[in-house]
Amino acid sequence: MEETVTCLFVCSAACGFCTHAKCLGLITRKCAAIKVCDNPTYLMSVCCERGLSSQSYRCAECRTKIGFQRGLPEARQCDYNGDYYCDMCHWNDTAVIPARVLHNWDFEPRKVCRASKQFLRLLFPRPVLHIQQINPMLFSYVEELNDTKRLREEIIIMKRYFLSCKAALDSKLLLQLQPRQHFVETSDMYSMKDLVDVATDVLLPELAKIHASIAQHIKTDCQVCQLKGYICELCDLREVLFPFDSIALVCPQCSTVLHRHCYMQSGRHCPNCERLSRSTS
Image (tube, rainbow, N blue to C red; front, side):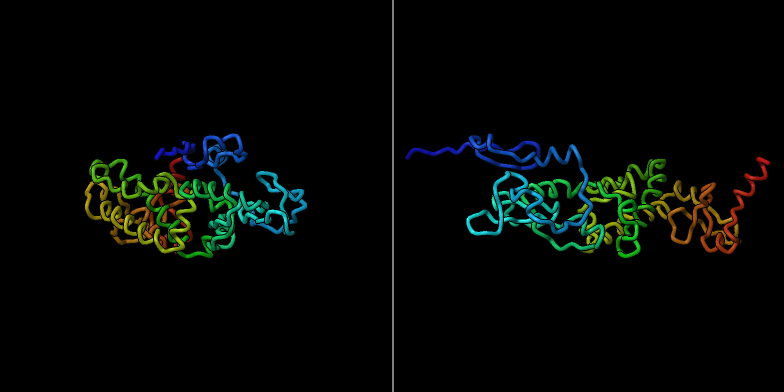
């Protein structure tokens, strides 16, 4: 029996689009991987209802006539961008919508067109969401997200100790965050994967464990790092403080570390700032 070979074209740009080689000329959709590279940002407005007349009753992608009457391809709305598509361009796939997550903490999957599905899948692990700029109130509303933010900020502070400690670099503790490399670089940016992992109670326990192991190195295991601690100048306690301790506060002017409660009781008075002020006057 003669073997039949079907020639396929698979996009090498990471989007995974697959088609017959002979059908390449029929493709009208822009490669999702190229869209991600050109503009790696999400639409941040929640999809709203609008009529088919806004698209002249045609599919937003292939321009086929669509509608809700017999004889016409079914018009299907994409919950990501709000456009309507034919059943060839919209297969009723579902995805978590970033705008609904950022504005409503809503992770219910909703129907999206094929192009949106591919785009959202490729952008899913990328840290492109600056929550503080988009919806800072979300940290007050979602306790787990706020705890994640605090741990990330403290890990960034801990990183300064590691960069000047050979034993810390040799221990490669920061490599525990390699799957989320952006956590070592900044405390502000999040990926959709991060937010899904927060909502499913995956990220916070993982991050707390890493935070604890790094803190143990600095405060207990390493004498070099221990010597870089601070003593509060506002009280008689000889307790060694570190900038990432929950009971500590870093002076916003000179970066001196003090007990949080001592600083507040003193009327936000910093002894080091006072000395600096006297020396320059």
